[in-house]
Length: 121
Image 1 (cartoon, helix red, strand yellow):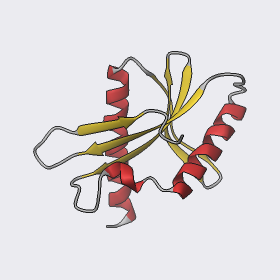
Image 2 (tube, helix red, strand yellow):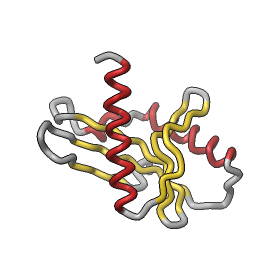
Image 3 (tube, one colour):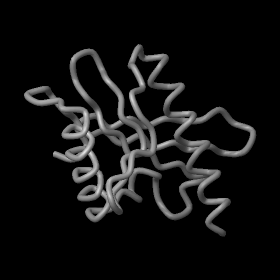
């Protein structure tokens, strides 16, 4: 799969995740935030908690559930990006959480969301 196709799938998954979060009443604050080589897909607020979200979408579970694609290396990069974003926004002493949203989007079916709150504990 080429990089453009991968990015398009990633964008589609992030769009679906944002729609899902907005339906929950969350506020989307930022998307695809980069700090150096570290990235966080979605930054949102769930009431008073800042939530940094990694999104993975797949069309089937042939090679595992989408959530299984979140590696330790990815977790480290999300932490770095989250810390940088909080510093940049000058936000301190505020609750933070790290969630993962896995989306299974099979052909001709609605997306199936798995939302792991506080996934990096």
